[in-house]
Amino acid sequence: MAIYQETITLSAKTKGFHLITSEIEKALLSIPSIETGLLHLFIQHTSASLSINENADPTVREDMENFFTELADDKPYYIHTYEGADDMPAHIKASMLGNSLTIPITNGRMNLGTWQGIYLGEHRDYGGNRRIVVTYYG
Image (tube, rainbow, N blue to C red; front, side, top):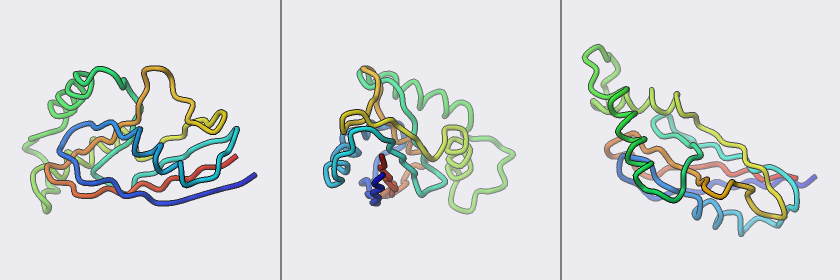
């Protein structure tokens, strides 16, 4: 079994949910092909998340952002506000959605469903660049 790993840096994105599937695919081009295996993605941040969801209709990403904004933003009882009012909501959203994904590799490609894409959940108003550790093995 071969194991490859690299860290990619995503450019800063606005608050919301962003399809990053193509950015992950580009990173995989530098890794020798594995016919059957697993891809593991891990985001090295506590205020952003990774998830898999609808990749075709951008209103899904808007609805996701609206739901999580209503659920977690602007709560008067937050104590952790050292980095701003968006900090604690970002931590909650990241914990709910998660910091890693595991995706099967088949014939050297991610084996996502037809309508599935990889989302970066940017939960800060100004989150900056985001690092993802990409581990590919099989």
